[in-house]
Amino acid sequence: MANKSRLHIPRPTARPGDEPDFSYLDLSPAGAVDKPSVAARVRDIEYLSSGLVRVLDEDHTAKGPWNPDLDPEKLQIALRWMLLNRVFDKRMWQIQRQGRISFYMEALGEEAISIAQGMALRHGDMCFPSYRNQGLFMYRGMKLVDMMCQCLSNTRDMCKGRQLPIMYHSKSGNVFSISGNLATQYPHAVGWAMASAIKGEDNIAASWVGDGSTAEADFHHALTFAAIYQAPVILNVVNNQWAISSFQGTAGGDRRAFAARGLGLGIPGIRVDGNDLLAVYSVTVWAADRARRGGGPTLIEHVTYRGGAHSTSDDPSKYRPKDEWEHFPLGDPIERLKQHLINEGHWSDAKHDALVDELTDEVLAAWKEAQKYGTMNEGPFLNPETMFDDVYADPPRRLESQRRRMLEIEQNGGEQ
Image: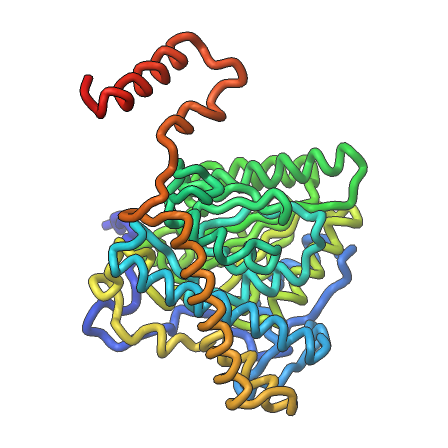
């Protein structure tokens, strides 16, 4: 009798109450993956999509061909930005739990990606982020006060109260608006990169999505256009193992690495240790150099772990072991960089603790200032009339009629 076909249902290796199990992860030793020329043919570098580029080993020593040999001072600066990201996140999470903002998402465990790539890109490069790239906004010059005001939807909110908290944007920093619709930023990034190439510029675009978003149509549309037109763009997949409550295997991660998604289109893919700032920086510089030289797009998969909940609306203890983050084999990106600097004689526990205290004071000071522009419960409040602004260049009659009606109601004390 012939065997019957069976439907494959991807399942995580551990659920609540189980021992954490990361045996499904394919890990390469630090320094084991070769670094090819940026001019290498895609067919010759397919190994980059299955191996794992790592620089820091288990003893926090940098090794191998991908070691960028960054100056210790630059690494200290990187550590500061990563810590600021984490301290900021912790404070904003507490503020949401106090009912002072409505929603928040933290980047616990993923800080190295935003900071390393921010360091590797040029200011003229355009970034199309996801909702866990707050470190990128900080690195590119956005003030903490402005980020807090956006979350508060107050009178200094860059989005004028029209967006969900954390949906920042920065024109001066060349960081595009965050969208709550998953993966829409990917085609935007490819289109911007195509325009840059048409204009003969050497600026590139970069975008980020999570592992779950690779199942969205926009992800595949973007890859197709990027491949056909050889757009100078870096497309990042942040594989943090969980898309809200869905394990990364649900998006196909248990079949083949996400970095391999572009191979059939001729796009090189690289798997990198997303918790190793040195490795992420080096891989990003490689991909950016390739794009600027006309080599087209690169798909980078950052193997990392979402240390906290998906958002303040999520309870991860319902779908994964409570201590899974502590057992993730690639560790904590901040602790790894800290220990590397200590081993090299450029840092200490005392300096680290002092920096945490300094950054905590900086975040608290920013929060005190942000509250002056209004909160959810205390004024000053946004003028409701602004809801009619920025909709049409020439407002239609019906909109002007609605504005007048609203003003009449306000003048009558709210009575219609």
